[in-house]
Structure formats: C-alpha cells, structure tokens
Length: 377
Image (cartoon, rainbow, N blue to C red; front, side, top):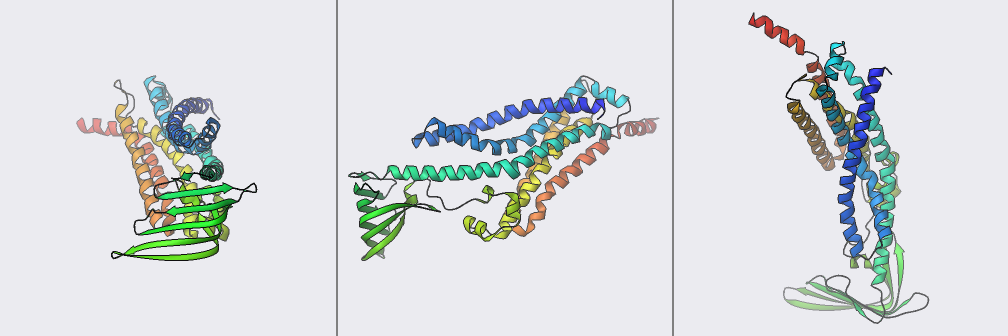
C-alpha cells in the first residue's frame, strides 16, 4: 500500500477508535442504567447486572460502528482540509477517486467488523441473554412460593401454600385468579409440583378443583371442575410475563436462511420471516462503507475555504440521515411482506450511488470554473 494511503488509513483508524469508544460508552451507559434499575428492583446482585450489560454490548457496538465510521471520516477529512494537506495532495495530481481508495478500505474494514458482530457475537449474546432471563424469571417466580402466607404476585392474583414438603411438593395450594372482571377462577389442590417447560415455569396441580365464576348480561354462573392433574402457567405471575418462545434474532444467519421445523416452532415465525431476518443482517454491514464514503466525498465538493467546511458537513449529515431513513422505511415495508426482502439491499445501493455522484462532482470543479471564466470573457 502506498505511503499516502497508509497515512490516510491510519488517520481514519485512529479517529475511528476514539469516536467508537466515546459513542459506545455513552450508548452502553444509557442501556446499563435501565437494566440496573430493573434488575436491582427484582433483587438481583451487581454481578447479574454486570453480566446482563455485558451481553448487550455486542448489539450496542454493531449499531454504533457505522456512525463512528461516518464521524471519523468527516472529522478526518475536515482536518486534512483545514491543514491544507488535502489541497497539497490534489495539487500533486491525486484525484478524488484516488483519494477515496484508503477511505473505501477503511469502510470495508468497519463493515467486516459489523458483519462479525451481527452474524456471530450478537446472536450468541442474545441467545445467552434469553436463557439467563428465563432462569431469573423462574427464580423470581420461586420467591412467591412461600408457605403459610398469602402472596400477591400481581394485581388480581392471590396465592397461598400451606406447606412445602422435603421433596419439593407444594401442599394444600390455593390460587385465585381475578384479573378479569368478567371471569374469576379459584384453584385448589391437595399438592402441586413446580416444573420447567419451554415457555417458563409451570405448576402441576394434583387432586384438586377449579371453580369458575363468569358474568354475562348481568347474570352470574358458577361451574365446578374436579381434576386429577392440571397445569397452570405461573409465568403470568411475573410483571414481565413468562417466556413465550425464542426470538429470531437468537439464531445464526445460516440457520435463518434455511429454517428448520424446530426453529419455526420455537419462534412461531414463518420461513419468510426467518429469511427476512437473515437478509437484514447481510445488508446491515453494507451501510458501513457507505457511511464512511458519504462523510469523505461530501467534504471534497467545496474544496479549501477559509470559513471551513461546515456546509459540507451539514450536507453529509443530511445524506447519512436520508440513507438511514430509507433503511428504516424499507425494513418496515419488508416487515409487512417478507417476500420483498430484496428491498433490504436498496439503501446500500442508493448510498453507493450517492457516493459515486459526489466523487464525480468533486472531480469537476476546475472544469466548471473554467467554463464560468470563458463565459464571462
């Protein structure tokens, strides 16, 4: 790699490291504060809070890196222009297309980092976070299973356990579910077992009775059902509800491209929705080179000015916002119709077209000036 390319690339990487650290820290702290309040209110320890915040870090980094790449290229190009280095390079015969080469290498490098995150680390972290949330949900639920006292896990729900046997059986259980004004149910059983399931903790009631009181058009009706065994989902006792299934974002990209029956059953998604999630991941790293090139190419348009390049900076920010707005609009449209997944690559294509146009425009200033001078003569 020529020395001038190494110089520009090293400058961009240095600035990128600084801005990425600052932006990730700010974003991560905001996420950590909300997790800190929620987990401590549930009685969790500081180690659990630290674990949860660490598991959210890959997602935060994948979101912040393209923005850090844009800020680094915009700031670095402004610095090169302010110190007349950019003018000297252009005077030496380097065209905007030639100067853009190390910036493009820098953007591709950032894109590879984002690809590693979205295809590898983020799904792994999300899957681990989902497992830990399920474990904590079961632990929180078990805190309500205290013998000899009435418990009120949530509004309209009452729980009473006479005693807990040495083998874990719950004796003389009473549950009143009055969360619905139109229907109230009372469950009683001689004993019960707390078991785990794919959707969360479940109480298996043994040798009991369910009394259901319904109201319809001002009339009340009571029905009594006796049972030998009945399953009751106590995930509803938690304020955040039980675990209803996996999220598509917990799985790897290759598996989403070819979803199997187990994945579809665990997530409740369709094959089209799984493939949409996979293509959305594939398209996400493509925006990193686009963000870097927009930040560089826009600042080349105006050339050197004693008043700085604040106008070009504003245009660069507007260009990045436009590409991001298009990306969000396309994601919403594809979310309604999974068959439109090729549209997910449209923002990257439009952004690349904007970069090519800006570089073409930056390579024409002398010819435009010459034409203007000839017209005046």
